Image 1 (cartoon, one colour):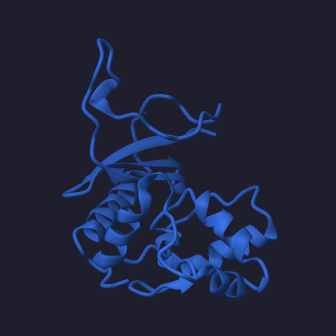
Image 2 (image 1 turned 90 degrees about the vertical axis):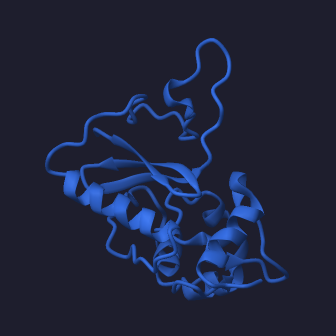
Length: 184
């Protein structure tokens, strides 16, 4: 598998990354402020990817192949639009779901159907996916979601509050929801 890394910027949010195999998305990093370069040998561009080490993913950016450039450019434009406050759909973005269990595929599909500007609980997500007693497992899927915004786990909240949002934190989740007009 040959994977292409594409960095993008979103005004007011920072720099994000897309990792694609042809036109299929295999990983997405939400934008975050670029860290200041420190030390005598900083990473080029000051960006340190949090992408897990995998033998199938190159360590350096590759040029986007001619056949994928329009789709990648369109996706980057839509992501930038989303972070600028536009109501942007991502339901047509092809995702690498190979290796997921039937439960995980059902949760992924249920997440894709959560409308912009709406939230549901982890229990509601599990029920929507067809697994009414699997709220904890649905939460685990969200915690390991490698396609934020495409599978909008920020729209899933705890029954008693906002819930967590991984390394980006609750404030980032709240900011995404506020961008969509959700007040919690």
